[in-house]
Length: 395
Ligand code: TGC
Ligand code: FAD
Image (tube, rainbow, N blue to C red; front, side):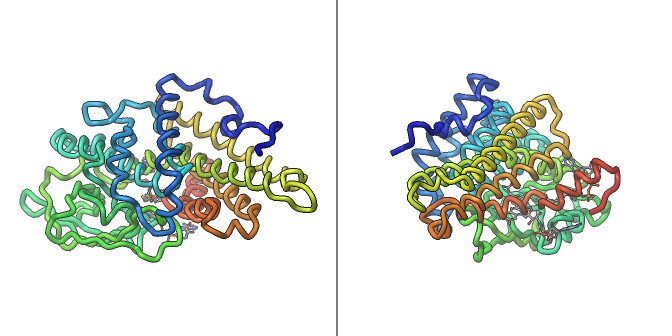
């Protein structure tokens, strides 16, 4: 029996009434995704995670929901959604699982966004509608076995031969790598020494991929290694941006989505913990009646409410072009911290049951370890902020 004196979870998810600041369209998008997530994903996602599966039907289903490339114009299959609406859909999705949100982040921010920002009209028409519908899947190859936090140290090389380019190198930790039809690959030009980006079909000669099979995190997401052995692509497949800033500008988009998304994972853990503790007697009364338990729940609500407000404000700044890399870093870093602290606390409050996959807390907690690492580790974002404050790069 729910305690009649307790606030509803819906109210607690929006403790400072951010809802009142949203447009009707933004609320509609958020509510549609929420209904889909609760009905179609939550009943199954724990099993997918346990089995290490990202189901094949999801890309099309996400496409039908308008979740892929939602901020892009309708003529390319997008929904012309605001940055805030895009953030909210990430949050709803990550309430289910960070790996499912990762698929949408990569497809939208790391594949469709650079094709839209830097691709020719031919590339846009060839790929964006198919990526938006989920008919085609994309991946983003920046990280390498020996170059993660410092992507400028990449060893992957490209070389112009006549009208075409050849690319050789290895990319590691690539979300959706083995499922992808197309890969955005970043490589250093042997002649100019500058980093260039290419739209590479994965069925080209010399392209091979295999999955990282030993993950204890992000198990409902495909993570792969890409091997490019003198893969030839036409000059028309090159993105119109020169230097590492091309790749880093994509990260700014994905990090924004993460800042919203993790609030969803945090609230999933918070709600699970409150419901569990209400039903769990200890020393003669429900655990929710204990002061130290309430103190921890209050900390969780505070962390997640601040994270939610930060994400909302960043969304409105982004709509005005104010999503500077340092602002995005602060929101990515601090919101992941808030969600991870909540997940760890929830896991612990569930006692022994908290270490089982019968409950969502440990799944979210393990996923959030990845989220804290990818798209710039917590330390890298701290150093980006340190550079912003002092003007000194301490990487
Ligand atoms: P640095 O000198 O700082 O910058 C080089 C050029 O890039 C520009 N820039 C940015 N532009 C847009 N957005 C950003 N966030 C930018 N950050 C930098 C910068 O202005 C400069 O431009 P220009 O015109 O002067 O050339 O470069 P650096 O080599 O010193 O590196 C700095 C550092 C450490 C911050 C950067 O390398 C970094 O962010 N490292 C972390 C790497 C990372 O986050 N990798 C993520 C891989 S993708 C992924 O994890 C996907 S997970 C799946 C999912 O999202 O769900
Ligand atoms: P390293 O860079 O080797 O860092 C190791 C440790 O050293 C970290 O704790 C780091 O914070 C610390 N460190 C590094 N530099 C410094 C410093 N200067 N000072 C102090 N400490 C430092 N990449 C892609 O390109 N595309 C993807 O789709 C993608 N998906 C991913 C999915 C998953 C599940 C995972 C786990 C990763 C994914 N990544 C992807 C890669 C991810 O972005 C990198 O793992 C991340 O950037 C960190 O790089 P690294 O693993 O090489 O760690």
